[in-house]
Image 1 (cartoon, helix red, strand yellow):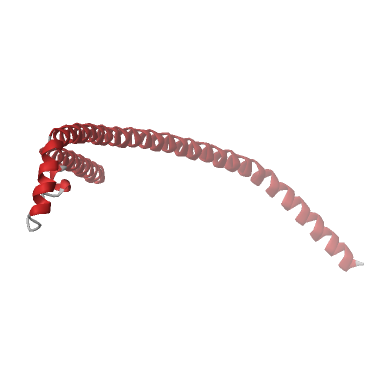
Image 2 (cartoon, rainbow, N blue to C red; image 1 turned 30 degrees about the vertical axis):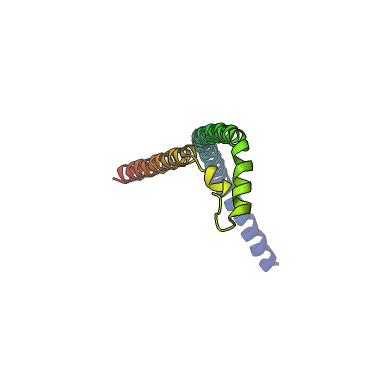
Length: 162
């Protein structure tokens, strides 16, 4: 009987100790959970701000690249118009030279060793070379702008690291 009394007393003392410990720990645990919730809210706010910043940078980059793409399309369209004009001038010259071609065909038939100038050489006017030069210059400008942006970003990162 004495052993059961001793076990009962020990169990009762243990229950009282746990109850008093719970009275001390529960408020601390509550404060800890409130602090963890506040930290989670702050972290979520920071993540949202970083996402908004990333979206703004993405939009700016897309606008820049679309602007460059439309500049290139305008250059290509302008070159195409120049090529059409050059082809029109060539066609007009070919029509005017139509009467001369009949004489040239008769001369070629009489003398088969003479060859005429190929028409592809006639379709390569200075307009094509000028258009290619403008396109290459605009591509070089775009590469220079990209290199400058990369250098500026690298200098910003190095300044931020200091």
